[in-house]
Length: 81
Image (cartoon, rainbow, N blue to C red; front, side, top):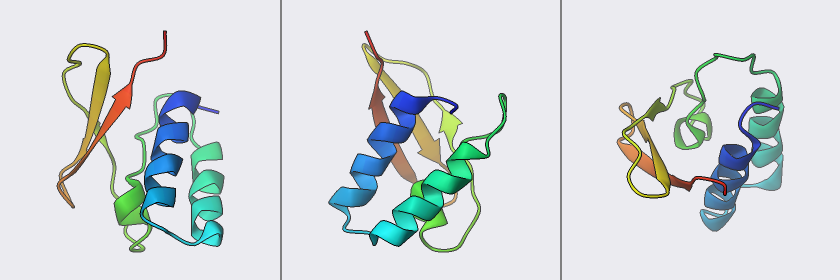
């Protein structure tokens, strides 16, 4: 799996938004198919049946921010120690 720590935090975000478990599982299935170097899918857009990708922004402190230009959602992902 590509970037498992990022996936873990995106799943927590989806669970906090109360997305259905089936939809979160479908996102996980999509994530499993990512090859090294593929763009990371935006979970917010994915839940709206839209395939958009996250852009990595400049790391600040111990946070790696990811941003979706389509839905303007930013995900602050803690960098693993």
